[in-house]
Image 1 (cartoon, one colour):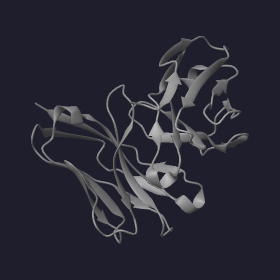
Image 2 (tube, each protein chain N blue to C red):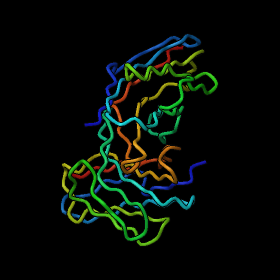
Image 3 (cartoon, rainbow over the protein chains, first blue to last red):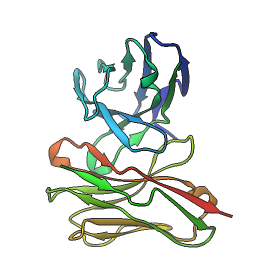
Length: 112
Length: 115
């Protein structure tokens, strides 16, 4: 049973809209991550956090922003969605990297 | 630079047979951990198997085992007695615990188990 939850599971939204993708985990993990994954392709790290009030940009440039006000919550926001933002967004968390990540089920975003 | 290469974009195997997915990686670090993740269609990515680089013994998890060749920087996944539920995208990855615990993923291998 997943201990990391992403909502919504699917989202279709119009260009220019502001959206927030939610990610919550109940494991008390300090480290959380957002990955962007296009169909059949590798994962690209776009944001990560090592704890409350800590956020960093990842390897892939992204117009999204994140916040980490609570340990369990790591939302990702797009201020103005564009068709180029159409992708799957995966949230993950870890206690210690050596143990691997726990992934959420993902949010598949389509911007029309 | 850290890289992971999965040279087989797609593979198929007959049910009950054995298949090996290849993975090579590159890092100058000596302390790292290797992983195989499985992502079934429209489902959550889950950890299949994990290997510490400092251990010579190959990790095994039931029907899943790895062939870890550290000098060659190779980390292949063997699936024995393939089942229909093994159909998924498989990602090879490694992490460097001394440099931020960020994962480096390959581009994935799409495995189809044929009944």
